[in-house]
Image (cartoon, rainbow, N blue to C red):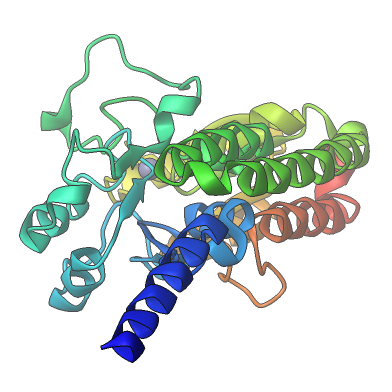
Length: 313
Ligand SMILES: [Zn+2]
């Protein structure tokens, strides 16, 4: 009996020490994001105290992702779900979140974070009209292409992780401060590098680099899509070629998931160069994380502009 009491007392002592040390029952927060840019930011702030994974691959168009059952399984185990918001994932993410039956991450719950709450939206229409097929009825949702918005979203994620796990708050805040410091240096460097090309005109396939262009001073003159999400038509493409020839526009920006035929045809008729923008970390090997993706885009555009596309400037 005496022996059993000692065993129990030792166990209670171990339990209280462990709880006060805060490690034995602590587990990583399971974070599921819709995209790899949000995944990268969650990993940067959460460090080894979160497990973050993205539902979409970096080579997928976030407007159109297949709502596969394997994605529901990921959401069933999530403590925190982070979405881009502004209707970017409206065609698939709400269905998956609902189907997961996970009460922690449903809209309005503590574990459901809409990252767009941190940013100021561009292109917000006065009269949203989804009937026309426009997939940007709430404004332009591709805000993470601007690195300043990356900083804002990192702050939002840090706040949320601190709410979830107050014991780890100092750790998350330190990670955020480290990220901010690195970003401030890089943003200054990127702006300086791009400065000689301010005002260079470009055409993009989809209206998804507007925030990047605004930050770095590139000038949008139109899209290959007649409206966001509407495939190109012969008439629209012909008009665009004519405008590009007149304006001597030599830069076309597309993405990994767009068909290459139309941009190539436009390039052939205008002498423009095509740049495949990497919106999401992991889209190419060189763009490993959020900072890496912006860095890749800036340097690739610079390479291209310092060639023939820069002659117009
Ligand atoms: Zn879009």
